[in-house]
Image 1 (cartoon, rainbow, N blue to C red):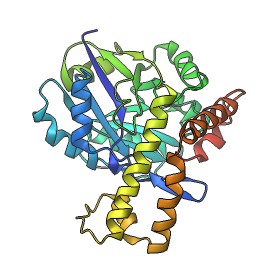
Image 2 (image 1 turned 120 degrees about the horizontal axis):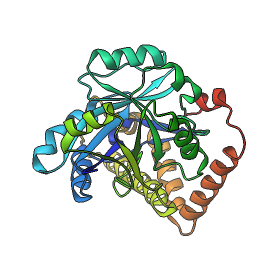
Image 3 (image 1 turned 30 degrees about the vertical axis):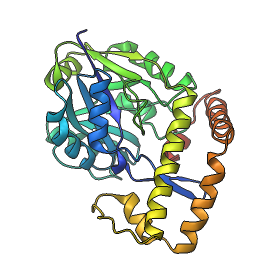
Image 4 (image 1 turned 90 degrees about the horizontal axis):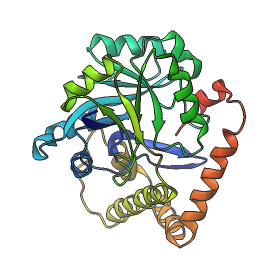
Length: 303
């Protein structure tokens, strides 16, 4: 194995997530910063896989020339009707809310590769046993965001048949975890990765991210959101990219809600609240995965 790639990384173009009545950015990472961090971590390839758009990957690839030694693969984590699916080596966005089979066909039509991310997760939408019926190239057997042990172990066990390449990805929504879980492959660069996946010669390496990195992501998102909200309240003019869902949301919410959001996040910054929230969240995930996974429930859950 000559090189490493992170096959599952998000940027600020991944949109908004929902937690109860709250909505917050999936990521606030700039595409250029993602490439810079991947280069710093010694990754030969970083695959940008934003939710339901290739925008972040396109912009990241434009910046790759600034960081020799690291190539960018344009990808997308697609919300299919059957669970999430990653397409790699794309040149156009695959629409969400199609069946997994149709999404696979759309990826194949672009000459792309198909990967099942966290297929047996109980807290984010995975394809589950549907992987057996789909034309997939790889299973993600090591996802950096899954600390429970169950989901990754189940995927690795399922992949022992040798039917798919086995890959790893950080599923990073912030910069520090990039490369914590990765894919080892022969050769160099994007084409080396493609060939290794098709040859089923890849190997997952690294480990899930520690709780400190989960907390760092939460704090980073809260801090960046507050900065945007405060800037908006002060009347600062910010150019809004048509693909930047987060900035559009900041622009559109009312003044009262902006003030409430800032006040609520200030409480979150007070130690040890971020760590307590992280510990509770990880314990909840472990409890969800402690027994047999209900795949239908899993597909209904959103990040």
